[in-house]
Image (tube, rainbow, N blue to C red; front, side, top):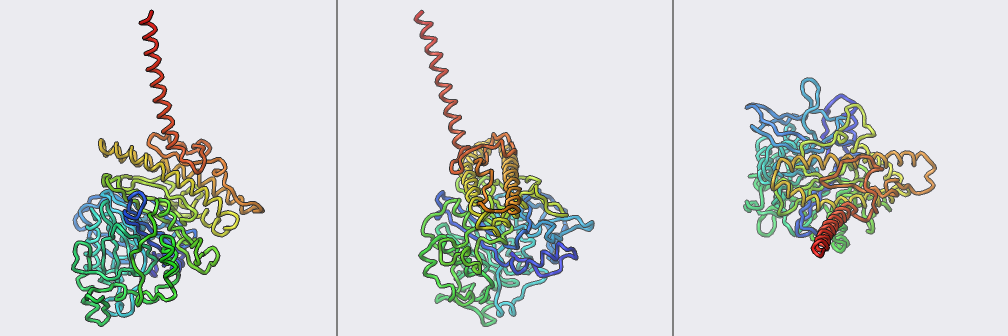
Amino acid sequence: MKVKEKVLSLSLAAALALSCVPSAFACTGIYVGQNMSENGSTYVGRSEDIGNLYDKMFGTVPAKDWQEGAIYKDAYGFQMPYPSHTYAYTYVKDSPLNGETMTDESGNYIGEAYGAAGQNEKGVSISATVSTSYNADAEAADPLVDTGICEISLPSVLLGGAANAKEAVELLADIIDTHGSGECNSLMISDSTETWYFEIVSGHQYAAVKLPADKVSVQPNIMLLGVIDVNDTENVVASANLVKLAQDNGFLETDDNGNIDVAKTYAAEDSGKGQYSRYWQGLFYVNEEAAEALDVSKVNNGVNPLPLLIEPSEKLSTLDVLQWLGYRGEGSKMNSNENPDIYAIGNENQSECHVFEIRENMPEQLATIQWQAMADAEFSVYVPFYTALITETLENYQTPEVEPVEDSINWNFQVINDLCYHNRETCAENVKTYFQAYQESLIAQQKDVDTAMAEIYAQDPALAAQKANELGMDLAKQVLEMSNSVVAELKAYVEGDMSEPFVPSAMTEKVMPVYHLDNSGSTDISAQEQVQPEVNSNSGNHVIAWVVGLLAVVALVIGVVVLKKKKDNK
């Protein structure tokens, strides 16, 4: 992500947002095809790197009917007609504290500027965007358009207007054809059956490809789209002049068959700080041998670009994917904990991280889980939501317009990240260990929740939507209580002598999430389930309760039979 260098507001908040521009050009996208995951899920995700203690908000937008002639406008000057109806969707947008400036005539905040990640009611999910750069030839031939569509509006416009992934790809293509683009970006668009990778490579040129099931990808702010066949309309969507523009202006690069190499043709040679180190770390995370064979010092993106698609050495679990966005090169020669000059995938500038897990053989509205973390993936917990169904989020995911508050999930994890990152030797280990146990518990319990939700949805979709809201609200309350305690204790710890490693009380008390449909919704941390971190106690408790209940019924039946026999013998 990047914050466009325009004066959006005279407020101090806007000035602070613009000051984050240098670190914002460092998002990392990831993709895992279903054949490369342990459970057969497809995963699409991204870390949104903007700046330390940069607050984001997780919320929902309702579906809406629009009068003819209604116009969508954003703060950068992009505008287009609304469709007659827009779908409901989720967003992870900038807090007003960080310069959110999409306001109405009365100064009220509207829209979802920098919506980042979301899913609509039709099951379309979007991760947008990873900022990229074009080269001087492309800029001269087709410069970016000041009033073209930018990252500030991409998620909102596409989620509001598209009923499936291909439709979203075609909608974005039409918008760029008509209005142009104000930025070079890459993004991923998914539904329950397919995922598309979309690159905007100049003011009016773009290309998108359907991602295969047998590969993974790491995307660190560089154009990665290599050779494509623009005539393969089943798997490729490309602007009409993608090839012709480059050919007419003398900068077209092709393979031996005459197919365009998009990165060699349009990409900037120098893509900025940390792009190649993050690519190498991401590659090492999934295939150590391939990473060791890659000399990033010889990579020059516009001349010798890196491949979009990677073959992992083994299949990845859900936890593997979630932790990928927090990876810092541990165990490799590019370990950012040992050499802080190596810009890592997992870094303190992550304002939020998300992963969409897309499951086969489930209804569209249940197929995708949005795993949402509100800070650096290294020191956060991803909370799962059925985002195609939910219509509300806990108010503690929102931020007042004046200043951050302690009783806020997003701000809690920003503070935890800040304190652990800058006190790594004493604070990091136990917080990471506890959060991983908490995460593993959520992942394990998700299976039982899916089974129950599928049964409800098959009989009553409206009830399933209600349950999705209740599940999300209840789980968020538990995470809020847990993170409140960790924040308070961390603050007290760093103000003390710090002679011993920090240990959160939630870890010693073995507090784990209780994630199931019949949960009472208690948010008192002391009243939550007390379990060993490595054990998924809730699933176990359900099984134990079921077995105990069954044994009780069997015992009752046996007792009745025995009594009857005694009576018969009498």
